[in-house]
Image 1: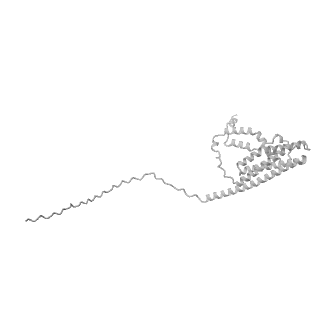
Image 2: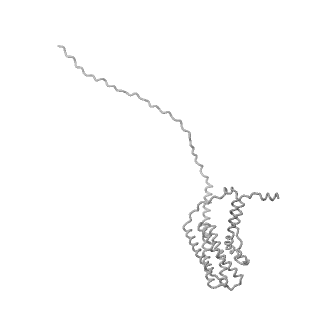
Image 3: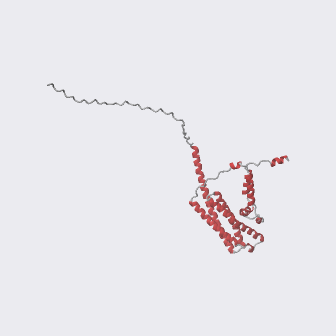
Length: 291
């Protein structure tokens, strides 16, 4: 009992709660109930698991949020001081890159709307196939529809906010790859058991998603090359700064002592020379002679 009480009151290590939260957020959810009957010989089971993440994530969203809030409330206050500072404002995106992204996203959104309309017209219950295969195809169609309605718009919104984000671009490319693979299987089944119109419409949707996938693959390659060039340039600048040491800082000496005041010099007064004019002498007339 004493050992159990010690374990019960042992403090939680710093960072352990955040690791648990991150593991829950990034752990891939399990299949939904509608996909537990998928046979193991299906070629693209991994692709379907990507599409199945949307529904199970939405079901467990409230539980995950509640657990995170409780975990953060128990986190010690010292973690707030160790938080990573906010990222600086991103550099402006070039016009050519932004224009290319808007064109790709606009075409993708149009293809998504067309594919949702075509999938809604597929009548799997009228196919001449066994019940297990029709159930499998119907589950794949529902997964594609959920992805096009929820997951894909969320990823495109993230990419619009960060047009040159490599992680968001790769996430969209991976989602398109999964959509292309699962829709290809649905189209093959429609060609074998469905009507000609269903097969033709789904084939057109697959071609459209393939063009979008290749477009984002090219963009991802260009962004990776650009980021690599920026990193190479920054490494060169860093090496140059490390090779040449910075000049020593200039020292500024401030003398607060006031110099002694010099005594004011007295002005010497020079005696003024007064010029006195001699008195004017009036000429005296000689006395008159005595007669």
